[in-house]
Length: 443
Image 1 (cartoon, rainbow, N blue to C red):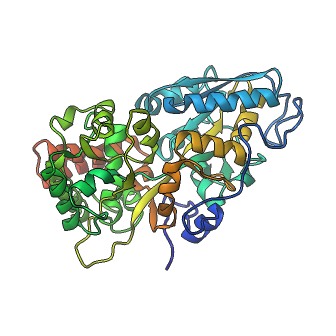
Image 2 (spheres, rainbow, N blue to C red):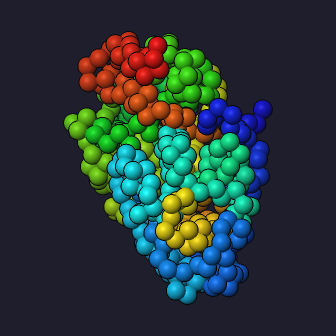
Image 3 (tube, rainbow, N blue to C red):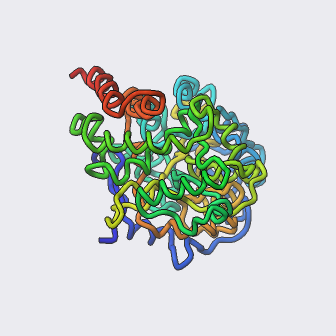
């Protein structure tokens, strides 16, 4: 079987490894496909054209783009300049909230269209929230649909309607400073749990913090749940199972996960429970910590902060020595590009989403932000994207953390991780989480 996969919400089309690779056109060292030119370089419609079947009206005026990626501001400003060149009289402004704030308040802010003509959504809970509140316009007829790897945009669809396009293909796995690993005598990423702990012992013995965990930043801190659970869960849909009652947080597989996370915490930096994302980013970028347990979405921030060392991915492999793990890592299709159903400038918003979806513009975005993308026919020139391209071909699971569509249940499960590193036993933490889940489910 050469299938990775699956899992989003029940009823979603699973992502097969074969179609995933075929769509990206991965060969040998990775996804290196034909594309050319920079922002706005592709064949252009006339400036007065309507927006390609996704709406009507002349493209012009100001389009506000609402998202959470402050590190992408310059790259998107550059693309916006190309957009304005294509559509005289049109312009794009950006409104950016921190990711944690965006997750908690974006729906409220965007609902009346006063902000975010075009906007983005996290896969899972937030996308579900947006669709339930009718915030997103139907993009099923957009000319952009054909620009994407088909199976990678299913997280932006619901009940047969395409509400958005997951733009980023990211790997939610710990980033390893391989210079520090080599100095500690570690020559390869561990393949089992004992070897992983052995690597952490070696790193600790070399005088650095093995892991810099942002305990006071939930959005980033709990990315680690993805690889912690990927091979412990009874099925790839383990968190859907907890949410619908098929599984419980008190099941042996989650108790095992909590026990392993408790072991892992012995290698966190001092005062990890109160650590901010900026704090751990500095530790890692300065070479004082070997692992940043978040994901490739922070590559650009590491480089901007001065980190110039080589980076590989070091997913938690929780299986015993001598056994073959079902998955080597995880990936996610997120940063879902969408149009606000209440947009003040719907024609501009749809044109902007379609503009970003063109291969040349997606390539410009990818190379400037160090993010792989879900758009076909993109060439990666960024050294970090090239270096991590082999992960495109590994057996990876669609990030299970984003299977949750209920924020309260997700928080209950995630907070059980905090409980075991602040004094609770795995059994106590699991029981407390399950009590919240039962109450939420009315059980």
